[in-house]
Image 1 (tube, helix red, strand yellow):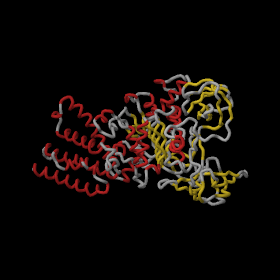
Image 2 (image 1 turned 60 degrees about the vertical axis):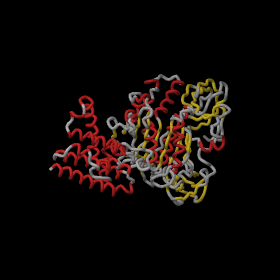
Image 3 (image 1 turned 135 degrees about the vertical axis):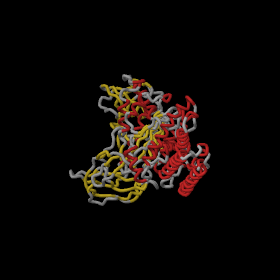
Amino acid sequence: MDAPEMQVISGKIVKVAGPLIVASGLKNSKLYDVVRVSENKLIGEIIELRGDIASIQVYEDTAGLGPGEPVFVTDEPLSVELGPGLIGGIYDGIQRPLTAIRDIVGDRITRGVEVPKISRDLKWTFVPSVEEGAEVSGGDILGHVQETDAVDHKIMVPPGVKGKVSWIYSGECTVTETIARIATDAGYEHELSMLQKWPVRVPRPYVEKIAPTDPMITGQRVIDTLFPIAKGGVAAIPGPFGSGKTVVQHQLAKWADADIIVYIGCGERGNEMTDVLNEFPELKDPRTGSALMNRTVLIANTSDMPVAAREASIYTGITIAEYFRDMGYKVAIMADSTSRWAEALREMSGRLEEMPGDEGYPAYLSSRLAAFYERAGVVSCLSEHQPREGAITAIGAVSPPGGDTSEPVSQATLRIVKVFWGLSSALAYQRHFPAIDWLTSYSLYKDSVGQWFDENIGDNWSAMVTKAMAILQEEAELNEIVRLVGVDALGYDDRLKLEVARSIREDYLHQIAFDSVDTYTSPSKQYSMLSVILSWYQQSLDALHNGADFQDILKMPVIEQIGRMKGIPENEFKDRIEKIEAELKREVSDLTKEDA
C-alpha cells in the first residue's frame, strides 16, 4: 500500500496477540480504516472499535512489537489500485507487487516495505474515444490503452462523476498524469487520471443483474458435458487431500472461455503456488496464441504468509475482477481455497474473543461467504451512454478436513453456489482424473445452458447428456448386484450397459491434464465423442437383440479405436471420426450377417 501523504500518530499499542493488535486513542477512527503500526509502519486494518480502543488485524509479521509503540492513522479504507499495469501482475493479499518487492529487497519480503501497487514510471499510450464537449457519467469509457495483446484496457469515468468533457489527452502518459477534465453542472472540474482506487469491501456499482444463460466452456469433458457452469455462475470444488482440486482450478484458469482470469492462491501450499507462478508465464493462450499471463492477474497468499492478509486476498481479487467486468469483459475468478480463508476468519475471531459457532468458526461465516459469491454474476454495467454487459464467474475450492463435506465451510458454500463439482478420493486413488464424482455432483445451470448447446453444438446434446447420466447411474445400481451375486447373474443387456458405462468413464470422462492433446476438448469434439459412444451402445444393443453373440460384440476392433478418440488432435478429428463411424456400422452389420 502506498504511504498516504500525511500520517498522524493517534494511538498507542496496548496489547499484541499475534496478528491482532489492540490500540488505544483511536476514538475518531472508523471501522475498516487502514492504520500503520509501530515505527516500522506495518499495514493494519481496524476490525473492531470499542470507545477509543481499536482491534487491528496486521497484514505483516508482528514479531518484536510491544505495548506503547505508536499507531499512525490514514483515514482511508483498505483499497486496491485499478488501472493499466494490473494484467500479468503477481500480488500478495493486499495488492503489494511481489515482483517489484523482490527486485528491491530480495526473495524475502521485509516488514514495512512500501512499493506502489501499480507502476508510476511505465508509460502507456492513451487513445481517447470521446471528444471534448461530450456528456459522460460514471462507467462511461473515455479511451483505451492496449495493455497486452489480449487485453484492451478501457479507461472509465469513476462512479459518481458526471458532466461534460472539457479537455481530453491523447498520447503517452503514466497512470497518475491527467488524461481528462470533466466539468460538472455545479461548475466544479474533475481532473481524471488512468488510476482509480476502490475500497475492497465495497462492491462496485452496476445497473442490474441478469440471469446467466451462456456456458463458460472449460474444455474439461466432465464439466462441460455433465455439470456445466454458466458465464456469471458460481461453483464450488470440495474434495479431500490429494483429489486434484488445485489441478482442476489450474485447468480452468488455463482453458476457461473467459476474457480475464483472476487466480487467488489463498492459503494454499507454497510449492503449489510456485507451480502456478512458474507455469503460467510459459503457457500459450489457446484463444490468442500469446502468453496466458497476458490476460491473467495472480494473487499469491500462501499458507506461510500472514494470516490476516489471507482474509483480505479474497476481497482484493473480487474487486479487481469487478473492475474488468465493468469494462464489459467476462472474468473468471478462482479462489484456492476458501477453507483457508475461513480458517483465517476463525483465527481472528478467536483472538477477538467472539462467541464461536460450529467447529469454532465465527457466527458470520455464512454471510461473509455469501457476500463474496454474490459479487459474481452477469450485470448490466454502470454506463449511461455506452450500455454493455460484463460477467464474473466465481469458482471456489473447498478443502474439508478428511473430505467431510458436512463441515461448516462446505455446507455454507453449498447453500450459495449453483454448481457442485464434488471430488472423490476413491476416483483419485483409481487414477481417474478429474476425480469429479458424477453420482454426487450437480449443476443447476444444466437446463439454461443446455439450450445453448442444443442450438450451437448439436440439436440432441441435452438428450445425449441425459442418456449418458442415466447409464452411469444405472451402472452404480448394477455394480451393487454384481458385488452380491457376480456378473454372471446379469442379462446380456445389463452387461452391455456396464461396458458402455465403462467406456463413458474411461474413454470420455477420464482426461489427462498433462497431455498436449487431451488437456482441452472443444465442445464439437465432445459432442462427436459422446455421440459415437452412445451410437456404439445402441447399435450393439440392436445387434444383440437380433441374435449377435455378446462376446463377439465385445471383440469388435472398433472398440479400441473408440477408446483412442480423445488422443486425436482437433485438426484431424473430423476425418478420423467419420472413419470410426463407418467402421462401427460395418462391423455391427457383419455381426448380424454372420448370425443370420
